[in-house]
Image (cartoon, rainbow, N blue to C red):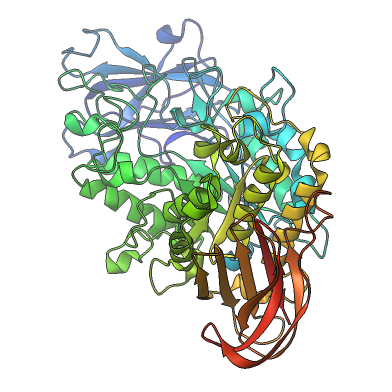
Length: 627
C-alpha cells in the first residue's frame, strides 16, 4: 500500500481505477490536509489513512483546491471515505477534528450515509444501436421503482428489462427514465439526489455492481427489437437544480468544513440564492467553476460510461433563475445559464446525435436556441402550453366550454425556426399523474366510463398527431387511473382488461412513426390548422414532411358528444383519402360507435384548402386520413 507522497499522475475526479490501484481526487479548497481510508488500509481506518497531496496544477492557488494520490492495490468494490481537516477549525468545521466525508464523485455507496465504493465502469457494449432520428422518437416515461414491481416491493432495473419487449411491441422508440441517482429516503420520485454520481442501491436488486445494472438496462433497451424494428433509445432524467435536501450531511453539505452563516458550504450557495423550490439551503453554487464542472462531468458520465442516448434536465428554470418557493418569478442566475450551455456544448462536441431535453415549462424559445446565439442550447423542451390546453379541453365537463382556439394554438406552436421537433408534447407525466390520472380527472370515481375512455384517448390522438416528440407516462396506454406514487406498482392487470385501449395506443404509435408507409407527414414540421369550429367543437389540421401521397395527413378531431355521420373538411389534393386511424373504432371498445370511413376529395375550395370531402366523426373522436 502506498500514497506516493505526491499527487496522482492520472486524471479524473473521485475514485478512478487504473492497473495496479486507484487514483483518489477530491476538491477541498478550505482544507489543510486530506486523507483517504478504507477497507484497503489496516484497521482502524483513521490509523492507517493515506495522505492525499496538493495537486501540482493548483500549487499556486490559495487553499490548494484539489487533492489527490494514487493508492496501489485498490480494486473494484473497495469501500472508502475521505478524511478532511478544515483549515481553521471554525464554525461548521466540527472544531479541530477532521471530518469523515463520502466521495462527491462516488459512483457507488453502501448507503447515502455510508461508505463510498469503487467501481469498474467497463462494460462489453455490443455497439450495434443507432439513435433514431429525432422526428422518429416516441417516448415512454417510466419510474424504475414502480414500472414493473411486485406489491410491496421496489422495482429494479432488471425488473424493468423484463418489460422492454412490451414497449417494443407497442412501437415506442425511446424510454425516458425518471431519476435513479442515490436518494436518502426508502422510496423516491428521484428528485432528491444525495449522491448524484451514484445509483440508488434499491434499483440494483441483488447485483453487486450498481453501474453494471444501468449498463445492462441500456444494452437490453438497445437490443429490444428485431432486424426490422430497432431497439429503444434511453434518456435519463437528471437533477442539477438542487441537491437533497435529505442525505447531504455525510457528503456534499459543508464538505470541507467551511460554510457561511450556517449555509451548505462549497457545493451550495451560501446566501439567499440557496433557497429554491425544493428547500431552503440546497441550490448548488453555479458561480463556482468547480460546481459547474461537477454537473457537467455528471452529464458526460451518463452519455459516455452509461451510453445514454439523451438527458432530460429537471426544472432548468431553477438552474437559471432564483425561484425561491414555487412560482416562476425570481432574479436570473447567469452562472446557471453558463452551466446549461456548458452541458449542451459538451454533449454536442462529443455526442451530437444524442438529445438534450429541458423541463423548463416556460415555453421560452431561448432554451432551444443555439449557445452561439446566446441560447441554452437544448434540443427540445417539455411543452407545458400544449399540455395545459389539451388537458383542459378534455377535462372540462361541458362541451360548450371547450376552447378550440386554445387547442389549435397549442397544436401549431413552435419555439423557433429550427423545427417542430424542439418540443415534447404530452398530456400526462409523473407530475400530473401524482395528482390525478387523466381518466380520473375526466370523471372522478368513474375513470373506466365511456366518457373517460373517449376523452382521454382523444387527448392521446392529439398528442400523437401534433408536431413534436410525443410522450406518455407509464400505464397511460391501458387507462391506468390510480394516482401515481413512488410506493404503488403499476397495475398490469389493466393491460388485459383494457386491451382495446392498449391497441389504440399501439396504432397511434404506428401512424406517428409511419410504420405503414402512408403517414410520413406526422414525422414532419409541416402544420396548418385550417379549420376551427367553436360551435361544433371540431378542429382539423394538415400535416406534412415533404408532401404528396403517403406523406400528407389530414387530422380531424371532434371534442363534442355529438356524432357527425357526414362532416365537410378541406383536403390539399383531390382523390381518395383512406382512413388510417379512427379512435371511434369498435375494435378498441365494444361501446365505441365505429363512425368513420374512406372519402373522396373533389374540386371546390373548402376551409382554405383547394379540395373538399366528407368524413365521419364519432363523439370525442379523432381520425387521420392519407392517400
